[in-house]
Image 1 (cartoon, rainbow, N blue to C red):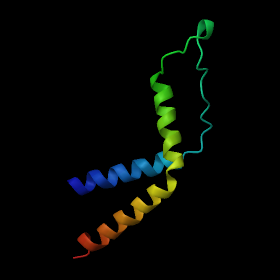
Image 2: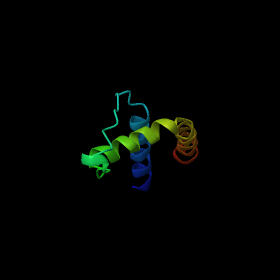
Image 3: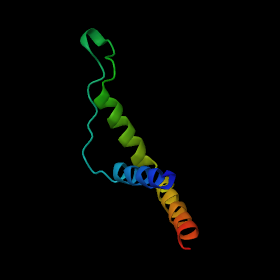
Image 4: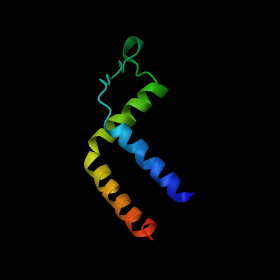
Length: 75
């Protein structure tokens, strides 16, 4: 059960890291120069952009998961 959750999380991280959508930033300023509150879409956009910058670490995590799969599931 735990291994399936880890693999599912790894696959979701991979999918988020390789998305090639054009993620445009919304306008940060509201009326009269006031900063608008961040919406859910802005938060998702920031998360996906941070995943893009961490591709090296995600690749290392993938290698680690493959190693664990070979060690624990190769009985």
